[in-house]
Image: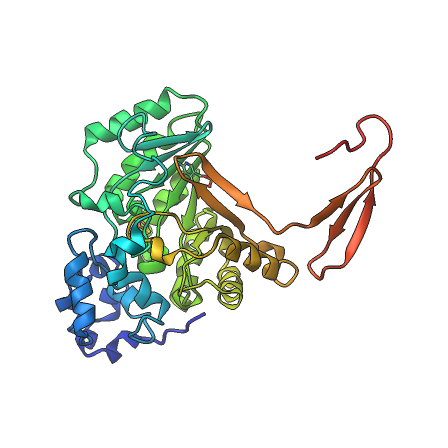
Length: 386
Ligand SMILES: *Cc1c(COP(=O)(O)O)cnc(C)c1O
Ligand code: SF4
């Protein structure tokens, strides 16, 4: 966990006059975000290669970061996990590197009964509220969305989305995502939560947002906390990828969220050169638990155009789970999953702990590779194959 001192941002000449009230104000963070390389150069000068990457990628994917997230960079180089998540690189547009990738690998747009909704599983739908984000992550699997103009949806679009959910009683859960839905103004969020909350068959409103990572001050906003408290079906799923993203400010923000009765879970994407090793993921899981966030998923990186250079070998994630099991609290063991192309859904992947099955027994191993036989039950219903 990173400890940020009182008014630490004043060390940067650009922010030396920024007050605590401003820095801790989520709207100030959004308003003052960096959108061009000229903005970045107010802090640090860029190399020709870096500038070239900005210019060449700008028409396919936005650059953007809040001052807070930018301030978490510890070294201005590709080795730095925060730098790497926000700074463009030429690999994103190299045809040779990206040739096996897709704009919409999971057919989210095709499996969409009404614009803005993806319905893949019987009991839950994905509800895309906006295509705006306060930070644009280079590894984003919805990069295609940002080719369109930045905007929230129109009222008519939202109404059609609510109608679809209202008329499908099998839907128990709505996953409100984006872009980042918590970049919307409170009024808009209230409108969405209220409408979903009033649908009787909806049990869970899951908000997928990265604001806790890139703009934790969002959760110092009493009005938003009050909405979480009032529309009491909300779960928050966030997206931390590296321990350098977890600070004492994160901890305070999580405490505020938990005080509203909203559980906080995390999804991490396994990213080459950022977190694709046992030590980093172990520390990340431990630090998440320290601030009371439950690790939910660890995802194999999707085959999205402009992102595939971040992809590891599929087995890397299984090796990491092997490392975590037994070493880290069960609470800190996420589900490793790959999303199947063509919209076939997520598949969990595990190390193999069931080594053998015979007529008489199952052979299991533990995390230290000690093995134990479990006898099969005889007679009716006794284990016949698996
Ligand atoms: C990931 C995803 C979900 C949620 O899946 P969980 O396993 O419940 O987290 C739902 N709908 C779509 C379209 C998804 O991609
Ligand atoms: S916050 Fe989420 S939706 Fe927005 S750019 Fe990052 S990964 Fe993509």
